Length: 365
Ligand code: SAH
Image (cartoon, rainbow, N blue to C red):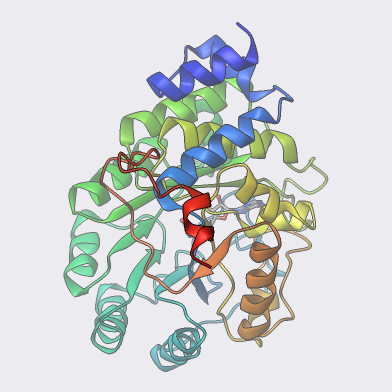
């Protein structure tokens, strides 16, 4: 099938066969981006949503082979933010226009359910018009339920890879692919707007693994999908591995957009790290969310998932201004909004009532 025919089929049926997915994944036809972008525009218009990322702890009990925060990395600098420090980040963020706060961290047992629910409850009470997103890894069903009751609206938990064998090659023995997926189904069941996702080009990833990821996403039907290139961290076992490919990441963003036009898809910091205009290219390939860093400047350079992470020396305000300018430069607008998932069917792009003819309007000038 021609690339054009593959794009048509994906757009009209929202899926492809395994072989067709693989063909589209590695195509170099920019029409894929154009079609994905117009699918995004038909649901979200020219709006790009922003989420304030608060990296609240760099401690982690897990030993994921790819991650700079892994417990085995004895060189990693560790910190924890107190509830007051987190609330300070929210206050700064609110003034800068953020209406979603994302609390992300390593799996740090210090933040047990009592402590975590207290933090969520207080943000909820203070910022009634904001969404609270958590990204604190695998927890029990009851823990997810308590946090939801305390006021958390959304949860990001990348599945990392849907293929069991590949999952096991990226994680220590005590972590299981089934548990990770079960967490995601549980989060959805509890009514969280749920985000899964994976790294592009993680060591050992095959084209078939990526198709497994797409099929898993099809089954889960998440509200958000976060993907970004894998980038090696020098103090992990994956030191010296190749980073993920820009073009493949962009193709995947576009494919996800065509599979599910109303998805919330971030142009990630990792994408901006492998290419100076990676995030802009991500938006032009179909992404509609950015996540500038709201963490206090003193801890920025201690939350290093991978090498060369961008924006580790900038104040939150600088990050937002820089992002606003970048988005404007490509014809989009960073908006002050919770930026919720749109459940409704996309509005018809062709209004039935015709606009008055241009000429008639200009005659009255
Ligand atoms: N502990 C939380 C947050 C993890 S960090 C959790 O388990 O969900 C957020 C994401 O960063 C991870 O899900 C992973 O996909 C990504 N990440 C980690 N190391 C990375 C690396 N070396 N390159 C690119 N992305 C990485």
